[in-house]
Image 1 (cartoon, rainbow, N blue to C red):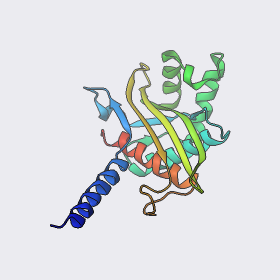
Image 2 (tube, rainbow, N blue to C red):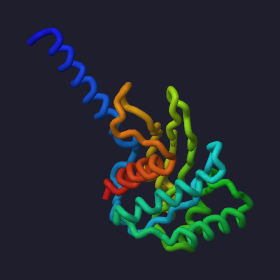
Image 3 (tube, helix red, strand yellow):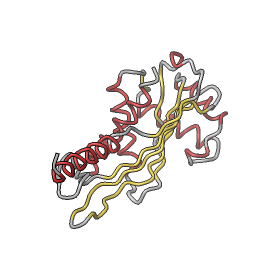
Image 4 (cartoon, rainbow, N blue to C red):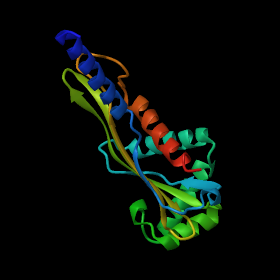
Length: 197
C-alpha cells in the first residue's frame, strides 16, 4: 500500500472514530437494584432554567415530555396539571426554587398527582455560539429521576451538545437551530431513561 493510501485509510479511521464518539449518549447514572417496574407513572416538573434564554426551561420541558411519551416506557402525568400541583406545593412550603425541593415536598407532590417518580431538570446552556463564520446551537441539560415516596435519586443524566460541523470542511449531520438540537438532546435523554425498563 502506498504512503498516500495509508494516509487516506488512517484519515478515514480517525474520522469514523470521531463520528462514533460524537454519537455517544448522555452520561448517566442509575441506582443499582432498583425495581424499575414500580415506576408506572412519572411526572415531569418544570425544568429550572439557569441559561441566558428566559424561555428555555419551558421549551426544553415540553420537548422532553414529548420524547418521553414517544418512548411509551412510562405513563406520564398530564404536564399542565402536574406543573400546577408541583408549583402549588412548593409555594405552600415557602419556596419557588425547584432545586430546593425536599423529600417531604416530593412525597406530597407524588401523593397528590399519583406518580411514583418525578423528573427534575436544569437547563444550563441554551444559546447560539459562533463557530468560524457560522452560528450553531449549544444546549446543556441535567436531569434526574427521584422516587416520589422517599425523594431518593434513582437515575441522573447530563448532556451537552453543540451543533455545527463534526469535521472541517465537511457538512454532514450539522444541526443549525436550537429547535433541532433541543429535539435531538431530549430524544437522547428520554431514550436513556427508558432504556432501564
